[in-house]
Image (cartoon, rainbow, N blue to C red; front, side, top):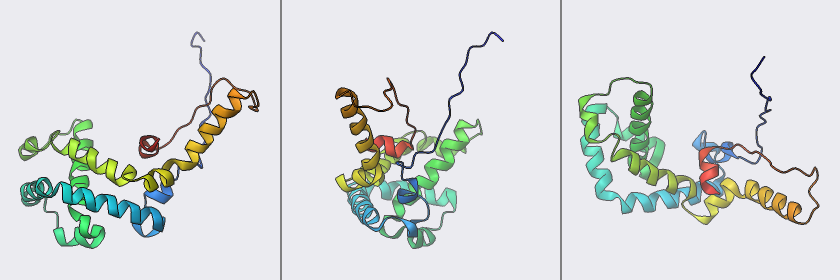
Length: 172
């Protein structure tokens, strides 16, 4: 009875195009897919020695099949390997599960920093990627700010709340 609270409705944002940039790679927007591929190939080349060293270290411990990854990820399969290993380790760690001794050489660093660079390239590596990922949401926000400054905002609110995926926010 003494707890003051107000329910906050949460609605999905149609401006957060997760179906376009995530999900089944066959269903990606073709233009986004091409821009993403270019960014990831550039990153793969820039981090060539780091990725080679990483794979040489983790593959014997993980049992990951490079050939299967190549089928799924193509020429950027090494980046896919980093993601698979990072995601497995970060979730296990966050849930208090013990990690194998061999992981101490790669987790939390350098794999977390490497994954951050991969995420930047994969989601926001080019202007086109940013435009496809967050363009509509950005236009919506700019329109709201312009309407507010022109006193034409309807309904006239002091604040709007938006939720979005992390990569959509990163693209802003």
